Length: 426
Image (cartoon, rainbow, N blue to C red; front, top):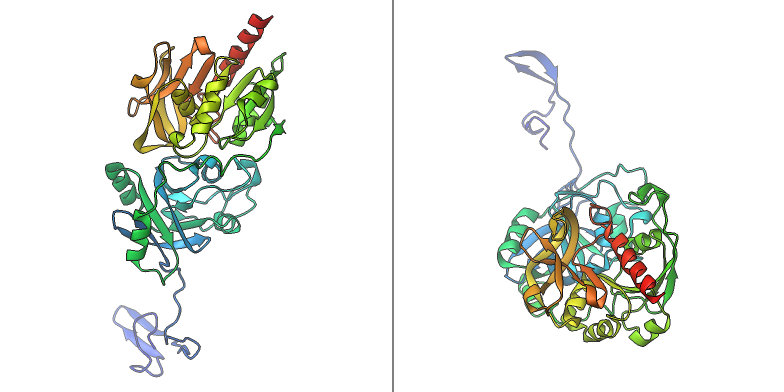
């Protein structure tokens, strides 16, 4: 048996005293270790070893360590450049069907808590990170990230080269991948699984939308009410929100701006919405391909022009299609909390939170539709307005939970749109 200094007990059975030319005599105590309880004859390592794989459709295999749930799962791999807010990302329904790779290397240090959830469950297919924090240090923490994912049956992997995978995604575009902790599955089988699965043309909205209408009353807590403070509108506006995968903080911000909110399923008929006589309609964010949900496009067509409308992310894309425009799949999409957007109307640059793989082609839009915001990273359309049809939209998240909050004032613009409509009716 070898001791800490590399001296074996067989060489020095007593290991009592050794002389060093630079130090006096000293004593070394060596202890033999029984290996009879180990089936392999070796002592188990005190650290976790690779027990999972991420296999991409290009044939690459990335060994990793697992946390959260175990098993095998397929999804589209996208990278997110946010530095904070992993719990909001986990519970954002817009990530349904996707593996989210965090470019920020250190994840998990603040744990999780119920207040930061954007929906009642996790919809993403899995989480890919570089370094999993071994401890949590937030006063609101109620659980660790690993325990949280395991309880929600979500797979996670760490100790994988996220930088190299991100470079590959930027070069080749979003790739389908398979996460697996099952040793019995061969790499070739997982590669084939990734190559035969597709997310394009799949209706992901129906799986994340509510099943029946409900009322939402909670506003933003005072400590987070950064723009309004104690100010509230003296007029209450009735708003119907189409749930294509809506985040809770979109509803909270609407409530804080003085709206009475009714949330309806993605398949809710436009005729029923108009019977409710709302002051405005919001079409929410949501996952996947807008071309895969023609029923939602038809609903939007029937509503625009009758009441003021506001579209966010998926809602923005559906508005673009309803106006006669086209949408397209981006190379690797926009996912992160640090995307610069220019407001064309006032020249102001906003740092925005974004999460989408599709965009509206501005060249396909009819005359009269105004592009109000432009993404400064790639020049893509980030906002629309059409005064004649009383509509506005953004391709990103103005509620931006956990941040940034540069675009929050757009909720006030929606309020003004509804105010103007009310005055005209009077």
